[in-house]
Image (cartoon, rainbow, N blue to C red):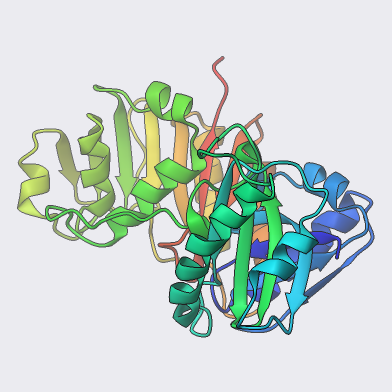
Length: 349
């Protein structure tokens, strides 16, 4: 089999399938998506998988938690020996730096975690004996992914460390901090981890920078920003948790996040308001167009139907109305639900 394998949030398989199909066609590649509702993954069959993978960088995909290039699909695996068919299917492949045993993040996939873990313990020495796996994990080499979708059905796939998520299943495992005012804090923490590079996090999040949090109550996103040393104007008519205010870095302004504007340009603006996505996109574009901030992270709450179409419409609308060169990255994060998260940064004048 030749093609791509993408993991996604359960229930968003149609969105990832539509995204891959449209993006592949725009890049000039023929192919088709294969998936089932609630499976947690999409297969995009394409004869030119290597070229397609290069044309669709993982960082540019919105609904994919992980992007892999397929090596083989194995069905009817014998429970008494699943390893021999895998070794045979991998014949001629280059050496891998790591073996990642996985299953879809779905109701049907999660019970396979034990099988994946135990089989991985037996598969690693077999791969090393066959010269297919480095003696020690080597992050410079491609990774081998074995994804079980049932006990006798698995995909073998490859990922490049520089063009894929570094976490199993594409999910960064973040823990809820005891002081976090709400679980929404995890969304911003994940956004900073996934949508920004390590260099960007070091240069764009520094002590003393100034930010606005639109729709801040009860203060989850404001709290995250203060942990990076930013001074925050928290805009919301609702109350903030007292320990967020006690940081000494927060000014709480009781105002409407859709009408408030800063008196002077800020480094950052973040927004997690529950509102129609097009209205949010237009307001965020105003912030960047008017130069009220240089960097922004905001969420777009998606409708129940035609979510890929609405995503493209809102991002195109934002880019058009911002009227300036911008770097735009969007992703449906693990801690997102019916939404996507967008990071935007403007180049220095």
